Amino acid sequence: MDELSQDHDDYTVHDFLAFWLHRLSAAVLQQFERELAKAGLTTAQFNILHSVYSEVANTPRAISRFIGIDIGSVSRGLGRLETKGLVSRRASSDDGRSIAVEMTDTGQAKMQQLTNMAISQDKSWVDGLAPEERALLARMIQTLLKHQGIPADGLHFQAASTSRTD
Image (cartoon, rainbow, N blue to C red; front, side, top):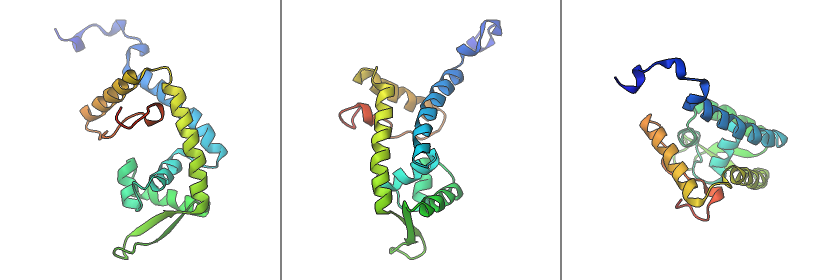
């Protein structure tokens, strides 16, 4: 008899991974969203803006791929960020067909503040873990995601480590 065919009467909601991951995720996101709201941004807008700020993506398609949301959501988010004066969009000098996204001076300044806030919050969540525990947690999350076919390359907890090699 395998584990899954055992009696289910002994299970409570506390026995499910989804319960604990949701509880942790909700707590982390609530704290982060509260701070972002003070700056007039949503989590999605922060993720889009930070992708451009950190220079990992500067086209709507690249941003979409990097943060894992559809291109329509990215375009709407960029529109809102452009209205707030945080980014600008222009035809790409490469081919003239794609759109290049750039940070404005206002966007640069805001992202410096928000990145400091995000680093501080991340640090508060993992400060109780030793460096090897942080590295193990990152590897375990990465393994769970990959097992479900979700890309997780480069996962680490930068804010709590001294290098990106955790």
